[in-house]
Length: 53
Figure 1 (tube, rainbow, N blue to C red):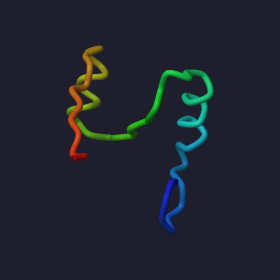
Figure 2: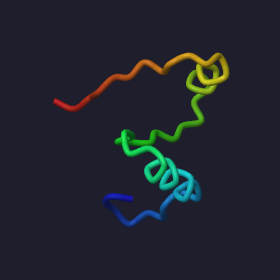
Figure 3: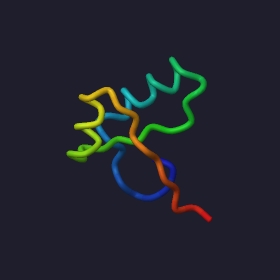
Figure 4: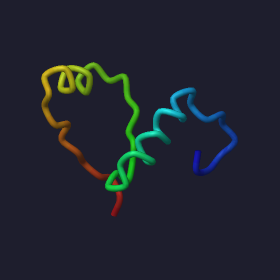
């Protein structure tokens, strides 16, 4: 967690393991989206977009 009062996800150890194993990774996006899951199962890249300006 970067900011706020919430509790970190129970998946935090898995996310940290990715950062430790892959120095080229700058972010982990954790989702249970039906579309993201379908793309992952089909071994397809998830198109990205950014709302930052």
